[in-house]
Length: 264
Image (cartoon, rainbow, N blue to C red; front, side):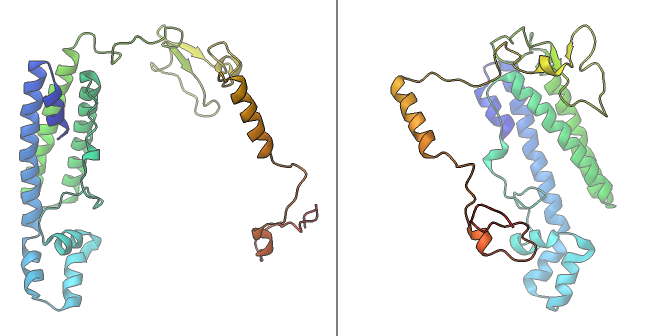
């Protein structure tokens, strides 16, 4: 669905065709995965439907080995549910197309990379030859899709940074070493002629030349109202009120207040 939505909005004929091709193929992957799920649950489906075993035996059979296939078998009758591996129903929230080709293609590359790793993990979990072969094919197609998306991305020149507006040159080449101490490391991501490495703490604060604070412009009436509100809701630093937590405190509550200006 991600690739379909991108294809529909795409103005470039080459990328549009590629996205429609891969989106259509991904639907066939859904068919393959759904068929595998249905086939693996086929035996349990009949046994559940016909109550072929005693309840306790049936429960042990579908939950054996600590798996959660009983969710698929009991709730969905052995059919393939549109859920993720945690049982969460699929929603359109999974579609994160943003409408910029360079952003979407990078997101697609990441999605294919993640899918490839998930297939690897699934292959490592099953001894079933047929399942391993099917998953291996799907895993390989994810590699092919990633290569296509990479080619499409770099066929856009320039393709970085995304969008139209340029980066602010004052900050585009700075690397702020914010987490200092043990584990500090240098590499091509923060060293070399490309980067200005900012280690000094004073140079990391208020980098735009200001005082680091947030300001806003208010009318005289707005300032008066804000001051009035702040005064009305100000806390008293000398108060030590008796609270509900104090009244209901028991062993393990820590220090509590008596409400008379002191703590015990």
